[in-house]
Length: 118
Image (cartoon, rainbow, N blue to C red; front, top):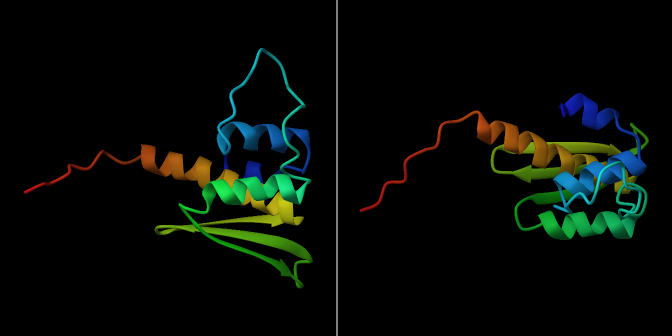
């Protein structure tokens, strides 16, 4: 998924499904589209599980933007910054999905670096 595709997603079952797979690491059972995942993108208590999972690897910031009239979630990891927008749970989902998706794409573009030891 691209950044634009992630940011264009609406809160609901599809976003919840993708977040459960790519961020929360829940396996797919059977074929087809499941709808029994947590409501990560619409329920703040479910979205907070994402924050708890990612808090060790990222600096987390969530605030309401009066100008944009939406919640903004920022995740900072190393040299990268990921931002999601929408309701608070939707913003958390999108920032986490951006971090996990784009981080993997960035890492896969680079050659492995040698580890030097004494």
